Amino acid sequence: MNILVIDDEQRVLTEICEYLNRMGHIATGSPNPLSGLEMLKHESFDLLILDVMLPDIGGIEFLRKIKPEFPELDVIVISGHGDMDTVIAALRGGASDYLKKPFRHHELQVAM
Image 1: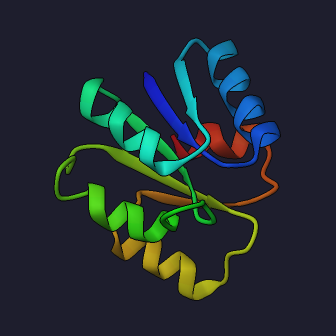
Image 2 (image 1 turned 90 degrees about the vertical axis):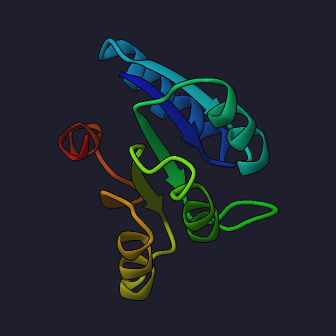
């Protein structure tokens, strides 16, 4: 799979991308949603892993913005600050799954 990961925490971004690449996927990382949006417009991705707390635009708002333009894109939302309202908003916004940070690699694999 070709996977885009958007997370402003560089350590998390690197860790997720390295894990996905080791699993045989092609993972590309972006530290902010604006550059991530440009990547989505110019490259075909099978999956987006999207953090909730992002600079410029929040992850849930970003999700609501991109889903009409990329309806077939699967999205897994991740967050270290999530509550039940955030989970519900993510799923209603079109996310296929939600993972609370920190999560184990196998949890991500199951969600994919």
